[in-house]
Image 1: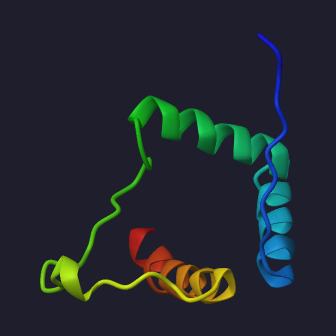
Image 2: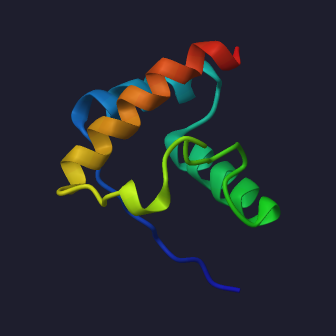
Length: 86
């Protein structure tokens, strides 16, 4: 089986933090991405809970206007919840 390259765009702060965290864990950004992809495939989805707030009706959910808006939302959400998980 051959290999394929995947690429994504993240803001500079996220990229720097990702590189530093993978370094501190003794791995590389590429290996961390491979681990995530493997876990995603084993779980047949995200390897952590992803849910819509039970109080939010689907009809009220709107797509983000831009990729930047989605990235900023994900960053805020992660930072808000990351410390609670540990």
